[in-house]
Length: 150
Image 1: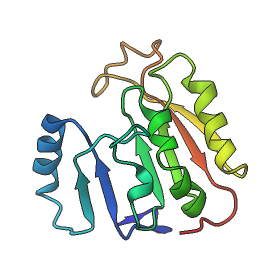
Image 2: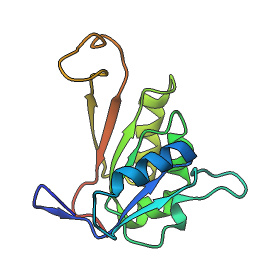
Image 3: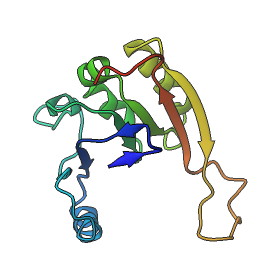
């Protein structure tokens, strides 16, 4: 896997706790003949018995989350991983009222070098911009300063 001819991804982990979404993901990945894509059918969190991002022993260069308000807990479950690998983060920040403030603060508490960028994606499909005024699909991109560790 390659991204913009600069970043090479050795392994990709798709973490999805919803069984129906896992089935869709598996179906979509049938067309990708690549053994570097791994599906982990769990939710991530810091609660007792929950899977943690820190449980991934591989090097991680990108974490992308749109998990309906569970982003902060999932990020906390990967604090050691984020500190060790300094991955690029693409995190949805529109689910909870304080996400736009608290998620960057949480990331910055793990590594002060992260720079932040926001992008709003239009909902709907194709040329339909009926939801442009809504705050859906607001993504925070956190890019570590300097070179990544992993």
